[in-house]
Image 1 (cartoon, rainbow, N blue to C red):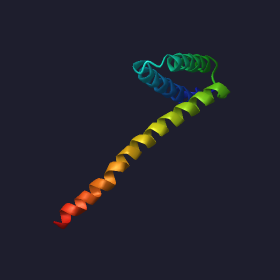
Image 2 (cartoon, rainbow, N blue to C red):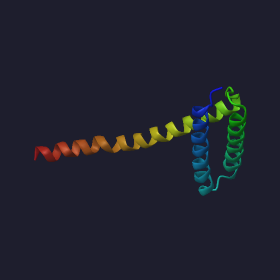
Image 3 (tube, rainbow, N blue to C red):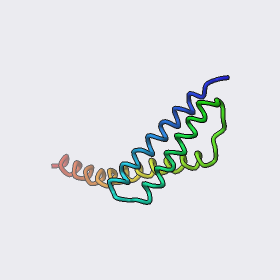
Length: 102
């Protein structure tokens, strides 16, 4: 039997991402989100322990849903931060062109 190293690493990254979101939610005083994130973290941790004990297992549906929500949240925040950066870039480029023509 082969040890599921990649699945365990993926679950650790998922747990870390949930912990980071929990820190943000607790700083923002969002109690409902904190409770939901804590339950998701417990589910991920229990599945990780079960996976290490038993070996090869398929991903449960609830873990896949958690992975999907974390993925969407991360890429949504990246897209928003990139969009904010892109708003300023055309203005800076046009100002650069103005100064270059002087």
